[in-house]
Length: 609
Image (cartoon, rainbow, N blue to C red; front, side, top):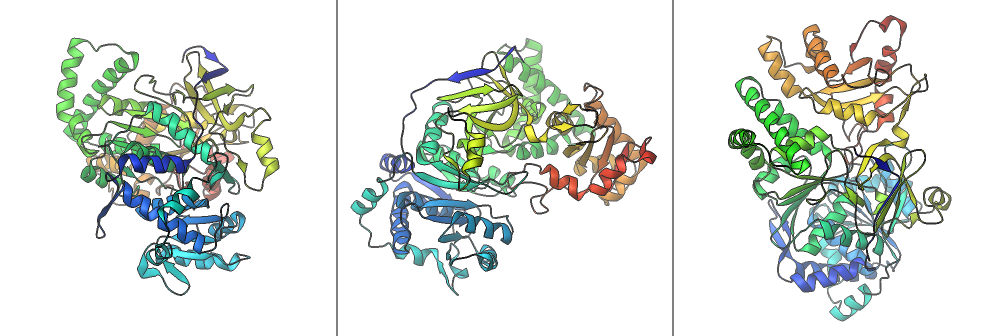
């Protein structure tokens, strides 16, 4: 990275506005173009005009249900068209919507419903309805329930269709007048942070917070009618939601999906633009590099060629003639298949939510697929930085978006100032003052560096920095990303706070490991049993430490714990946006971790659960 500085800005006259103005102007512009595409048994499409009509009925239905401007309504559902329609209805009614992750257990749903003061909750199906009914036992007031799947309605819960019917007689003039009553400073949504630590906090985002971010992001990420996207990150997360707003404004057609099905959905729907967290790219990368035998050798050769070409693209230089010839062959034999696997017509990916390992980014760049990595938080609506085709540097999250200032504090913490910075945490004035200074700087909690030409590099979460008993500070994200570029690694978590040294827990890539095991004459059917085999452990030890060879001695993990089961949202070790909850991992594997540091383990490097 070039010489570093502690301040950089991208000045711009960012227009002040509301999400409602964007919505109404966009519908007038795109009219009968297709906005949302619903697949499956209930296949249908929603034009922009139809979305407007659903919002008209929905906004009136909220008012007929007793909700006034400033009241709260929650949405507890997986991504689907009705999620977006309920959202637009709330925005146009002046009702603050409160998204809730569909994976949260009932007690956490109860906390958010109670803390936010929600008077109504939209749920997707019978499973989420049951969760709300369980949560209702802990609430101090009654909450009306609307179910998107009509078959689950009844016993006090109204169907989405019956709910909308309450607003059938709403006039267009009344709808537009009511919608345009929203002000830029009005709270549009309250997003409870999923959090890798601590209790969720309600992030209050105003209309202008989000609308300014849509405008700023839209200046550098071009989307136009004819573009197609899949909305599969949780809409309860601000990244997917803001991007969907931006795509909607740009005239893009959106199909709602899920992270579990996105690999197949990309082949069928053939998106042109897509936003994801690093976990998707890591999975694609692992699937490709896990090939063995002759195919594995071909992939390894092509990947090496692609990486050299990617480095030339980063530097803005032309590859030499012989490398071009090799790349043409690698493209025909390997890279065309990778591009086909993501639909064959993708213009670019956007990556956010967590750091993307540079080698994985270069792998895709070498394959002819551009990933524009960015950065932001729920509290910043979310985007503060993003790489673009014009300003692109692997290993960074790009330059600030228009209207945004970046400052690096004395302890390395990243500070942000701009129109996207939240109004504050709901009901937590003191905590709000702790993170937003009197002159508007928001403390992100992340540690980073600014290059002299304005590129921001995230080095770690401030709270994630590990301090050993010897007083050394270690950034775990760097070590984890080094390991995740290895074909034998699926997930990695570095631990060691207050210990003599750091260690790492690794979930191996069992597809790749199974291919090796077959060639070595080992039984790969039992993953946990395979990890116990000394030959397997010797292989993994060599592979892992090979990736870590350039680390300083105090940074290098001394012990490696092999985990047979992946970290998941369901077991609490991942957030709904696929970020590791380090404290939860540490608690779950406390016995294993303790064994690393016992006197009798001095000579042992590899451990299993």
